[in-house]
Image (cartoon, rainbow, N blue to C red; front, top):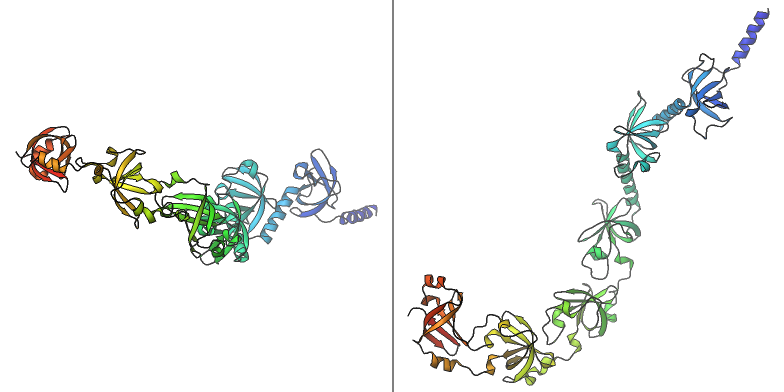
Length: 514
């Protein structure tokens, strides 16, 4: 009878505990925290034990309820063996299977670096991130480990409870998704912030946060610029206006100057033709000087509009960036954004009375300003300039270059040979200050005269020789054997015969065939 009662009470006692089976995930309450182990009450007749290492600091609180995995119902000591880690992994795997599919984006924390890649904690499951798919090339371990990133779920193995992740594909997918969002939000006429991504000769590409737009050089500034780098630099954060959208071509046109009012709108009223204005030199080119009249408005002084009289060849030596100059407005092309300016129009045209001031035959003094291969430029009074052609530098000597006769800065007397006020030209002569010696030369060296000469230069026409200090002649190529001519060199002596004296052309012809 007693035994029967005891058996009944035993059944009632055991029935008061819930059924626990190995492999279950059950709820447990922390009842004791030891140095190495944690005891949990899971509603069974005996308590469960878990290694303390399996808990986070937040979870280690007396009375806190957590889910655990039942590894064994009773061990040798009659305790239930539980696992917090397995419960987390199974729950995590269940979340992955139910809420994620291959190709989805999920978040995970990089736990550690291993051979061939990284281990990533995703819902408590260790996912493998191959190094080739990590996109961590320029990051340090400190910037990677224990940090959360977004990954693409590349492979899910249900049998092994393993997953393979890709940061590289996640970034690509994020960019594509972000790009679609931006395309949906972009509107022509709105202002957007962006980063200068690259610079070319024709413009700059701006990253608008996943979509690149082109800021063309012509849309950077109302002022004239020669290269986009004058306005933007790599990495600059700038606000730009969306000018146009072409989704099919994946093109976005951007503008910077459009954020400011167009200064050319009322240009004719601000700078009427004939007006005298002041401006700053902002660019100097071989053909002219660009003047900034105001921000966004530039005009050009063509080289021909610098001076009435002086021949200007070196604009860099005449102007400097930043110089303030007074100019006159010549013309305006509003559509092309061009203004023609002049300096010389501010002065009286000295060529109007040039013919009266410098009559033919007048002897005047001037300063050598410069040279060309065919002559020398002489600065006269009243800022006018004339030219001495090489043929008017010596009666009898052949002038190879005007610098053989004159030096820059030298003051010389010349005679006026011709004046053309319409085309702004004054022809000057140097040799005409002396009597023409060719009448005497013809008498001194009649045809048939044999004389000794000195070789000066060999040419395709023949051999130029010096007859005396003030006279040169030419041995025609037909009047000397080619073999003999090829052996000659400057300073050689040669006997010649006068075969022609042209007083009008100021030439003397010679022959080496005596």
